[in-house]
Length: 76
Figure 1 (cartoon, rainbow, N blue to C red):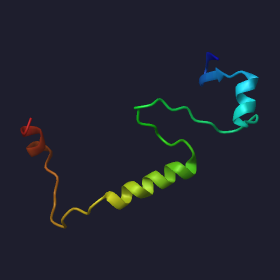
Figure 2 (figure 1 turned 180 degrees about the vertical axis):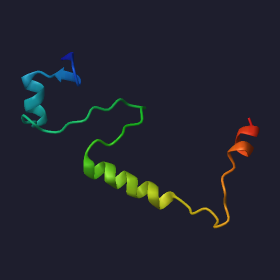
Figure 3 (figure 1 turned 30 degrees about the horizontal axis):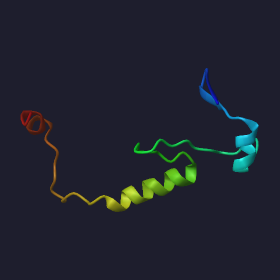
């Protein structure tokens, strides 16, 4: 395999045998992962799903909450 830099990213050249054994076709979306590293979904559906899950984790702030930048900076 060979990594090639282009103006908008990188291209990984994969041998024909590997492509055939994985059942891939020209234009297929693929993702590469590194064990032990956090991966970020790249498809729109996966991204939207991740955002929906994060929104469910959010808890509302009390109605009288006001962020005080000076107080926050004083805590440093």
